[in-house]
Amino acid sequence: MDRKCFNIVGETNLFRSGEIMMRAYIIKHKKNRYFIILMAFILIIFVKAAYGDEPIDIDISKGNSDKINVSPGALQFWVETPHTELPANHVLRFSRKKANDKNVYYRVIDNSGCPVDISEYILAKTPYYSDYQSLDKPVLFLAREDESSIIYLKLKIDDYLWQHLSDGVYKLELVSDWGKSVKINIHVKKTSYLTVYPDKINIIADNGPGKYQSKDSVTVYISNSNNRWNLDISATPLTYQGSEGDNVPVVEKGDIYVSVDSRNNFINLNNPYRLSGKNYGSTTSIDLYFQAGVGYKHYAGDYRGEIILTISGQ
Image 1 (cartoon, rainbow, N blue to C red):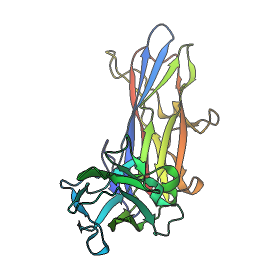
Image 2 (image 1 turned 30 degrees about the vertical axis):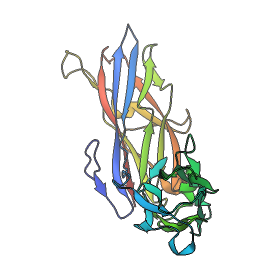
Image 3 (image 1 turned 135 degrees about the horizontal axis):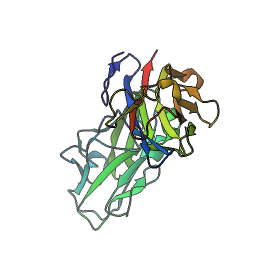
């Protein structure tokens, strides 16, 4: 597979393939003291959802024949990655066309068949509350003293909901005793989702030649619709950045190590090290610890190389 930093570099029928780039530095502060920084440049694949430009007009009226007129008749959410929150494709605008003094409440009915009650995850921002309210219970959309109101809807996604969503369309309804229902369609088509945190890891080598570990781990979060993914961890040699020229020994790939989920069992990266989704599942969080070895042959100064994380499908 051809690799290009910071870009999507391939596509399979499972999900897009990408890579995370980490650049490593060794900085000599004093005699026999080295400082290694692993900087993680993060690739996040996502699809941005945005509110529509125009609100949907909803007229509040009493009586079954003219309760509410909605155009268009449905709200849409598109889910591809586990964003924390996704806005609906439209804003709702409620307005009265007939005089009445009723408070108008709405809630969401979930008839989608999802094992999780999705109505708990659909939230509404109305003029009558300080923050978003879950629509698994009635929420005031239009107070009796008001002629109109603007309502914003969003879908909140946490790990629990994401794990229970399969690809497909989930159909729900926004209902009220004083209005016709508004259809809500949630379109789920999962793609791979990969993040790395933090974006900087320090390794301090301050006692002469030897092996030195990172103080903190690098956390890799992977989410996909299935477990048929591979994560390859590889390295390039760390090359000297000083003025002495190209004859200075490099820190070889075999002197760069990774350990998974612990500070034990470090494996050198002379060859790529592969993690398989079959051992982790479709969604997982992995902690990576790094170690580097330096010797008397290495000059004091800056060394630079790359740690590459490549995710692909089978």
